Image (tube, rainbow, N blue to C red):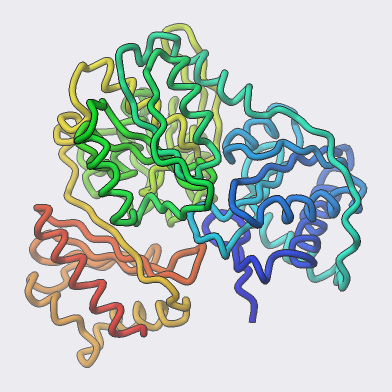
Length: 471
């Protein structure tokens, strides 16, 4: 039984089960799909994050591309969206070696066509070719890849669109940890007129999960905000496709709020977001159209295509983790920002800061005015998906011997949403959502409530309940 599988975004699993033949054979399978669909395609760009296993996996991917008769191109360590942009611009495929936010003992491969991130049908094709090839040996690594600078164009994309004075006067702390985008963020902030202050740089990989922040990360943000005058603190996950934005007090804004603020800044008339995003997004008058999907960028991308086909002019997709996907071109003040339908952290960071600069308000004020329900989430790690599935099945069946007693204290369950896991609406207006992570053996728990205290209590109750039932 292997840990390797396609999750919400890419192939993920334990490093011990990915390095060597598994990496080589899956990349060969991807190349076979490319050759099958387009005999003229030659180049495949390769990028990586900063985790310890990524250079070796990238070298093995390079060998696989060369052995498949295609041309590997080395883009080095860079944000995933920068690699995706380069692939779209050059009209070629790409592979990003990254485990995103998951621990250093895990890693993954994200595959891109020239049109953008692969979809679920592409994943099925890769798996079919993987079985058809039946490779049994990992060759000696000897292939070389020509270098290519894909980062400069990505940074220029935002410097050109926002303009040199967009963030003038702002002082922004940049929590660098081990994010592959840590230096690029500082450089773009400076190009837009802000003073960027690097903080917390790490030589070892730190698994920063934007949906389940570590207590030490939250404590660091509050400490930095107390020690110096900052307008905001920003960061990303490991491969810089999910943002973190904290206000002037060091309090992190939820990712779906950052996504909504980005959509507002860009003038979106349609947003596409998973069922885990805040229920306030469905409030009448906020956006002309709201499309809800399952969790995972392939589902959001499909929803954006649907919204565009049905006439939406500016389509913005985002997830509860904050990653923003731009589904259409945006024109502001005579400048054009081209569509980039893959998760990106730079756009929401800059849009949120630009909105703050334009309104002249603290981020804490802007967040409060948004009127979002109080929403919290966390995870239970090392929970196999079959245990999560069993928990959800019995909860959905309303098994009296298995019922969560805490629900009765909230008036019981009045509605159920089964589109991704199980989302329960309680009689007192709160919600509890259980789902399996698509990237790791984790059980995710999301809650909404009227006040922070109620949300914290609801989350604690249901994490404890889920832990007791799945251990």
